[in-house]
Length: 289
Image (cartoon, rainbow, N blue to C red; front, top):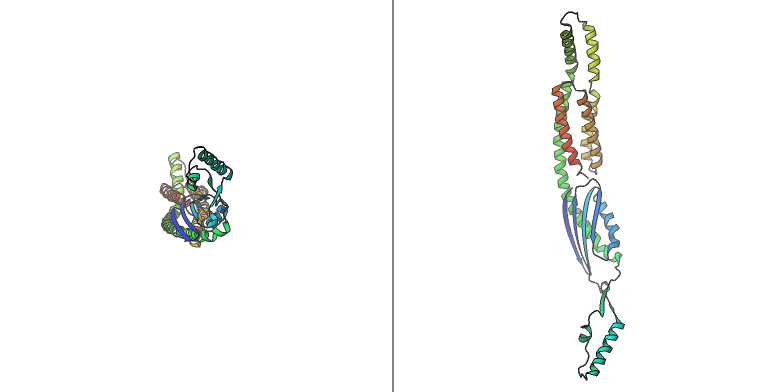
């Protein structure tokens, strides 16, 4: 689910800034940008993020400023410096210059002192970074929770509509045996033009066989069970994106079977409407953790 949060911690000698963005994704994917020199903190950061987020793409930017004395280092190129001072001295003597050599004159050469990378103490910076990251993740989760609540409300409304349509399908299915018998009798009468006396017992038997092939009672029971299970998963409070996605696949399978058995135009129309609702839910559930 989409969300954004940031946090900052200024506790000398470290200044830590964290920005977190989350996007919809079927799997957990953490992308991290970290201040150079602190790359070995990556696994700790990802582990902490995984405690809050189990699904989705999470982009994290972590900036760390180390202002401690040991956090900055310089290296003096003494051979180069000595050679440069010797050259200046030689030039001074050759030209009979009276001015004294100063540090400013020597430094003007450039490249004599270079900043060097100092090995960072990860255990020292982590107590500053961890609370800052946790604070950002709490804010991120709160924002995601709002979106999740809105999605849950949408799911409830669609489930209520599907439940009503499932009852309507049941009403149509109850009329199917009588409808099959009437159609069968009308077809026989049309073919024989009334020249043959119709055996009502045989008609009833054939109609019962045809109606049995179109029976959807098992599919309706499973579909009703899926509705209740979907509601239970939403109310559980734990990450349910994957089981909800699987449940929707099973849900869709039941209505596909009902559609293949349907011999009633009104029933078929209701089933098509239900499948449209399920497809909208399937698209949304991809964003659910």
